[in-house]
Image (cartoon, rainbow, N blue to C red; front, side):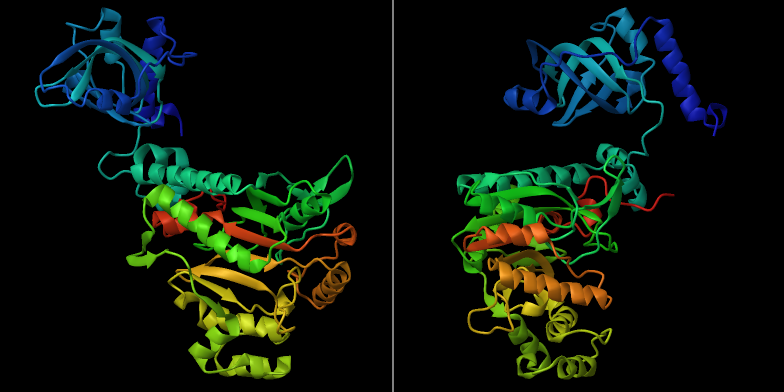
Length: 490
């Protein structure tokens, strides 16, 4: 589309040319702002309607409304709104010329005296106007905002301009991450960074993204989890408590709860087991809730959820038995387990082992019923290659996942520290991979070598930041809580 085909853009370009003809740079280098809108409002809460001050201020922001041929401007910054009064009694001639060339959406700087109008609105009587960025495209219509959901995700900058709820959600995300980080630091954890590029994808069962390093002429993988590198740091004695908040990448499908890149908190603590991680998971989630809600009751999708700890602890097979009447612990082999799953109407590929079958039934028949917070324990050892075997039942692992509103929000183990057992688990995963399981883990020889130097007893915990933010901000889609979600190109 040419400028001639877009009259609104053409009109703005004409105003841009007029500003240049006046010797005004419409994209200057800086503006020395002294106040934000919310600061001014807070400072003048007692200023009476109709009162004037001798206080001179410099504010800046985006024009969101122009009234009375430019006499009144609603200026929005990241803290709120301030009204600007543009009148020849106060505004210099050059400023009046600038005022006539302004459009909704323009970024401007204003200097002037503070007053409160007779109607009670805090206002700046402009003495100078500065164009800080002349916009060439109009904003969406004010009262309908940005209604196209996909456009909101594709042009997040426009979404943030128009939708205060989107700004609130992403600001809450920042506060949640800060609350998690601060809580762990107070508990003596050391924040670390581990590689995003892995020579062997590991730490979780998932399909990786593959890239190629030209100088080394080798394939590398975007990490699916930081687990194995974090535990290497524990082996090395960097600290007894480490954590990382960062991106992971999984080459899998998209859904309201899945994005190919996502943010996780992963931590490890020496000399404790998975039961300590239960308490820590509760601490972290409640700290995040209090940081954004100031309370432990959250409303998600019209359902009120009480996050007050302690949360119940129930075994996976026990929950399946309660829901289906089938006791999978009583099955000695995978064939019997798969037959029971089929009779329950749970779809299988036919190659699942006992643990995979139990997990499939749990996912199909139990997960979405776990609304109140709960730690689900008793995960099959078959599907937990990095966790210690349960001390009372060798078919199970010392692992739990925390569910809220039917979602997994945390995953934790008593970490496997026996290098020979770990090698055997990896080898079993490799056999599963050879049989067609694309998500089975690879043998990481260096990690096994690290274990041979000694990993102390250790508890590990991972929390999905995106899902936690969804829960605490009542957001229906993971795309709402990621600033720039992955989308198919148009």
